[in-house]
Amino acid sequence: MIASPHSRFENEVQMYLKSEISKMQNAYEVFEALAKGFVRFKDILSKSQVSSSPTLADVIDKLIKMDIVKKESPINDELNKKKAGYYVSDQLTLFYFKYIYRNLSRLAVMDSESFYDKFIAPDFEEHYVPKAFEQVCKQFLIRKNRSGELEDSFEKIGKYWYDDPVNHKNGEFDIVTENDDSYIFYEAKFKEEKLDKNLIWNEIQQVNNTGLICSKYGFFSKTGYKEIDEEYKKQLILFTIEDLYR
Image (tube, rainbow, N blue to C red):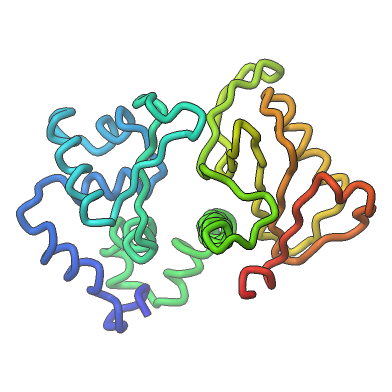
């Protein structure tokens, strides 16, 4: 519907953006940088070839106000501008700039199936869908929290910035909730194999290595779980993909 000539949504993103940002310079360059995974301000500035920091800040601010781009700061360091990240929040726009825009000349001369197999399929299944699933799980938690259906309610949800002294690196956990200085770590797995206690334990150990102390550990699994002892479940929150539709 989008990745083939004369398809229903072939020009949907371009037409929408032209009507909304026709007078905004550098927007396409910013979208390209974001679609490639550059989320920090300094990296977007470097990779997008926008002329200056004030110009980039102005473009990003306008895109945020349009609800096409969102800014996320880690819940444990919200005022640190260096750790803030920018993301394309509209999935159709993200898909377009990630796979279509940079390959428009190829799409015009290739069979649509061949185009999909070469330029979309490998990354789509391995990276795009799992990240989208992660966002769906986050939205699920927010919705359930608002309606009072979660046993472990929270006041904040988002990314958590960590320093890993064991492996000498730093990074982010994508879904962490906080309530009264108590954290719950969530991991979303969009995989064909079921999660077992060994995989879950490895995830928990990785979290503990960073120094993040959690009251519980939550998991979302596309295909469910196996070999989870009842006693072990007491510190776990286990969701299946079916739970998202209840």
